[in-house]
Image 1 (tube, rainbow, N blue to C red):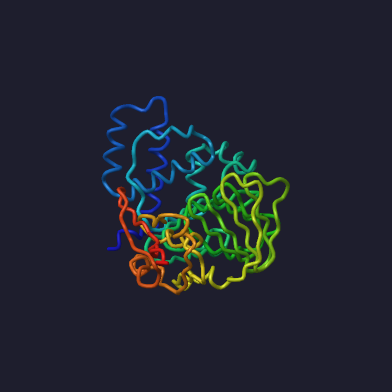
Image 2 (image 1 turned 90 degrees about the vertical axis):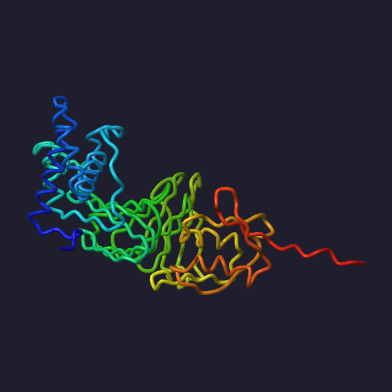
Amino acid sequence: MNQDRLIPSEDDAITDAAAHWCMRLHADDCSADERTAFNQWLGADPRHAEEYQAMLEIWQTADLLPRTANVLELRPAPRLARHWRPLASAAAIALLALPLAGWVGWEQGWLPSSYQHFESSDRLQQVTLSDGSVVELNLNSELRFLDYKDERRVTLVKGEAFFQVSHDSSHPFIVRAGNGQTRVTGTQFNVWKYQDQVKVTLVEGSVLVSSDGSHGGGYRLGPGMQASYRQGDFEPQLAQSDDFGNNLAWRSGKLVLDNLSLGQALPVINRYLEKPLRLADDGTARLRVSGIYNTTEVERLVDNLPKVLPVYLTRSKDGSTVLNRIVSPPARG
């Protein structure tokens, strides 16, 4: 039997048990015997740890517990989509916050009616959010979605996502990535995040993009425009995208490098590598590269760079690959 798919009764039982243990472990009268029983339940099935971690995220999202309230170290969640049904998450919130607090929290916009968490690893993934919006995830990407009374809120933790947002003018859709956000009511756009760099590309409709230093409502993009920002930027940098299709080629599993300098290409390439590629110096960064590659074979791209560019590869002490420019000897006079 596929252990990653639960029948409804089994799913509900694990959700209820996770809610119970989350309440008891944070209660002042939680006994040593209860903690022992919890650890036995946690170790009985990998799905128990995943569901309990999701409960803790809801508590922390709602600020009902201190951020340091985790009472044990949990195993990492499996790298697959975790989807909370709206009714199940609403029930869990009610169990955790008590009925009156849950109702007040929803009415005041403090608590979400649904919570979803998705991760992709070695394959592209398309997911549907509880509001009907469709999201495509690039490789090694992660996002969280919370549906509040007055707004829909996404956090792109890492990677890249293409959004087709279900229109709702009274219920804005906000994507937080890095130290900025993109605000829409219904449109299609792409968000790319690598370390503290973020790039938003608009396909259809309009969006407002703000960085951490922006004032007012942000900067409005039209179709084909891009906004880029990183930590500390007072405002996003706006540009008309000349390589619109190239930026979205990942949806077909392709990485397109169109006469980019290695300095420009490096963040895009590193998105697909376990250990980042590094450049030895500014001269290496100025070399230019072109080509179309499969996003699942970027390691091969790095190995082949010495065949198409005047460079050679070395290894740093931490195991990272370093790209070094071959310097021609001075001509003899």
